[in-house]
Image (cartoon, rainbow, N blue to C red; front, side):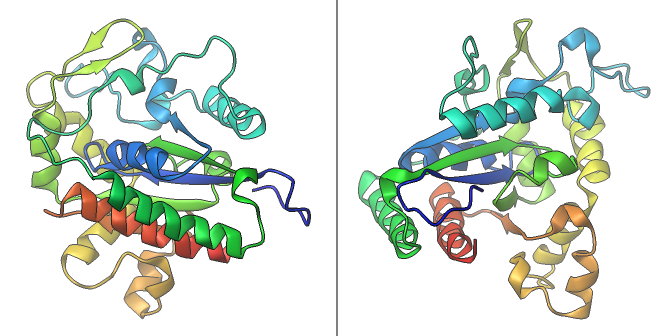
Length: 273
């Protein structure tokens, strides 16, 4: 984040929303864009390598979209820096992810503007308390399933969240989706793709967060990093990936509850920057 003493300079706050596929990160990101003035979303899914360059899973022979080698991190980071500096995407950039629907077949009730306005007022009151003009504050929301595995990328993020849900909820959400727009056209998961590719790769590459999610479900951790003082929690937080990352598990909570939780934590984290 840019540091300064002059409240007329632009202050850029980068918010990371990561988590497993179907954990709610893209939906929450889109609501945050509505809540936060001067905000832009950078979707990690827009930086997949071409399908011909994707790793092939040795067990199934299927393209593996769910590992770090599937992402062009270099272009993602340079694009993120451009957006932070200029407030817009590089010329010619077109987001495929913004064309993809999110969520399952079940249609959730949209969050009404009055609620979004209340959340906006709370967050922006904190910004003003920091002595920065609202008009001089820019929010860049980074949405992706694998934000914290890359050290250079995670070091660009000011406020970090990891959104998740129990295995069965994630599986049902993912398998109810129709497909995804890609560089080459449209991808539809083959039968069994969640259990064969998505879930195993999540457990491998986001293992520290998977362990935290298990602890949250067992009532052994809150997921809020500032609460992690017990010996068991400190052990769970030992990995650099989880440093200052708030883990929010939706369970069966509504999307509104997720957005409210993230917004409340965001206000608190802004005060700590």
